[in-house]
Image: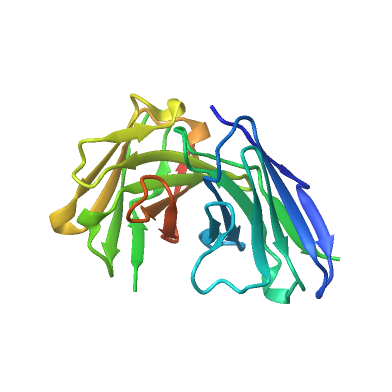
Length: 107
Length: 120
């Protein structure tokens, strides 16, 4: 199985900050990586796929990068609506696997 | 508008069974792979199973193989998850998710989930 390791597990930031979350795969997944945002009591929402392609309707302050085993999600100028938990997921090999999540909280 | 609505969750004793349903609307179900993803209380996301468009290809996470069965009824716009021999560790919110067309595995829309609690 491919293990997905996210860091940090929690991130404290202020509105307007630039934040970066990293995700590492235990083996190469090319660019078959997605990022999801989840708010409490809600379903996950697709933000980015193929490592860097922004899903329709997602603000441009979100961006993704990386390939093979190392990936990152950056939020430029954090907004109040962005405080949530973020998950990476590889979708190239079964079993599909998610990172452990990064909670972005208000400093 | 794509809409996925899960139902069928509840409290069940260890060893018991439960059948989850997912009603799909706003798209043609028969065009999409579909899947189930679960989330234990306070924990992260775990993929459970996927099924192809006509239901003859299915994939499962090892921990549910032989106990859970994913199925679909395209005519009824529905996805199902039959869960047998339930264990405490199966306690979770279960989400139904659509796989994007031209993909086999990228989840692009999720339902709001149905809660399964396995406890005596």
